[in-house]
Length: 284
Image 1 (cartoon, rainbow, N blue to C red):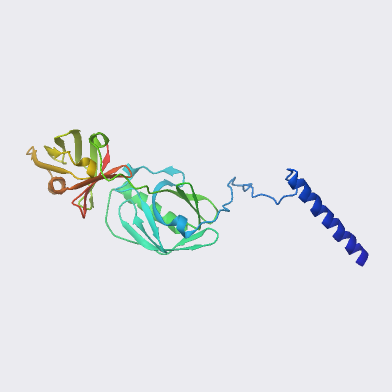
Image 2: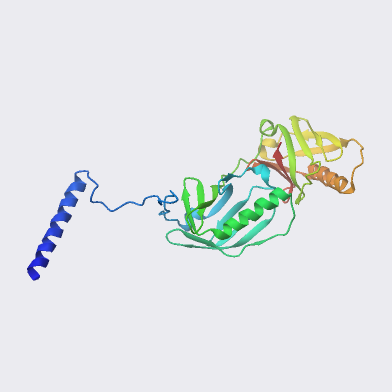
């Protein structure tokens, strides 16, 4: 029995030595088996590791399952910001916040999320609910280049997000030239019925439709490159409309006159008074 064991051990050592020689010679037949796609799903197992440093920062939603998400589908493109165990962000309408845990090698779980209770366009509300539901189903994550992939317990990709790249501080007239549609007005979703618009086509004037009436006014475009803007005063037609649209129209025109900063983020135009976002617009 002892002699047989010795023979087996010698044979094992010889095989190990032979494999090492083959590897050095460029053969791979003795190497460890590689991960292969699942025979039923065809998906490649996630074997990458994910560190907190890789995860932290702001990520904007680009894909929900196999659906490409365009900024025009929401009041604001959904995003998440990871910061030392806490997560904050925005659905398509509401602000979100909560916690997350990251365990080696790439296990990611979100705690219960809390959100504001604003109402928005039905399409935006539907997108937000699907986004939140997907977040709750996340079990693993991976970062490749500038993309964050979030997967469920079966390894299926349910969310893909792009790392936020800091936008230039200002804009040029050529960048914003054309017609823009209001998404939010002073923090409230714009009515889908006769949504206000803003047209940039001249260095000294803006125009548009405020929901009921047409308007035009002055534009100081000299400081656009530094992120500063001034518009108004405005002249408008004097048609009457439903009370809710007349209120929205007044808030829209007030926001334009109060705007002092302008920037583009994730394809949307953001006007603020320097502290609070007054208008969010998307290109028509």
